[in-house]
Length: 382
Image 1 (cartoon, rainbow, N blue to C red):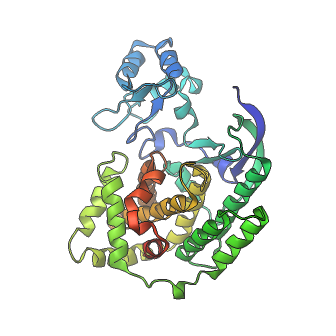
Image 2: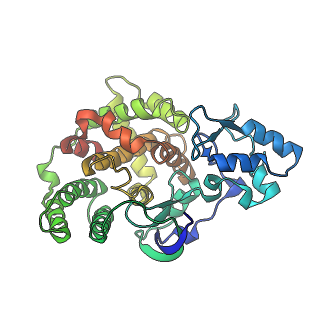
Image 3: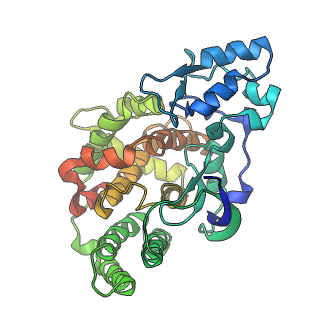
């Protein structure tokens, strides 16, 4: 079914995004598997192009052993981790020779993505350095606006009342995350309690759910919660990195560097704590930037409805794991250089794993018993 012109919700930064093209420090086509459809695969191989470009495309794409019409072939990076179609100057040879419309859809649209979990929305992925540079350059909270754009019809059987309920719950999550009267870890915990209450079955409908969420959020008191426990928090972060990041090509270098810096000995948590204090000195706006990343991630993932197999708490645990892993890698990989570009590169690498794999599904499984509210509070306050 063809896309239709409809109202789409987008963040205020969206029309300001511009691709850096050959100026990217880390190309978006390196470090993670990019797949294309069968239709696009055969269109590319039927294109009229130069022999040199044809040779590049022959080496760049291979048909998957479990190919499907939607996911038929995948990009094969060279030994440097780069797409064989990429030129030495960073530009895409396919786009350079044949124009933007020749690109596969994923390359043409990235880092933009449309989500239709409950209504049409679009945002840009944090895995793109240009997105993060745009977010880090602003101080005002992200706001949403409605525009007319093409989007596929929404699939599913949600009623208008259910769509409104889910929109209200998501908007409540954004409000909690952007309440700058509170430290970011406290906002994260209030979001968790509000989400759990608002997502519960309530006989009186949407309004009662939202009121329950607000009451649960306001009732959370850091003074009554478990005190900071750096060794336990560090152990949870280590578990996430060891299980989900070490060995993943998109974030392997960053995960290994942080792991090596902190070590695995009895004083590893103390090293982490000292490095975290240094990190806060060199990046005084780190909390603001992390807020912007988390809010944008909520929009990009259609949180908390990005994975219909999950309940609200599992989605929330994955969000806390996102915060914990990005913070672990950012603190561990910015000790030699303290400029914004270095932090952007580390965070973008982390989101190449978080935003483009089954991280939101795998993280609660990796957390195991550390996915309860007490453990998550220990994790996010570290």
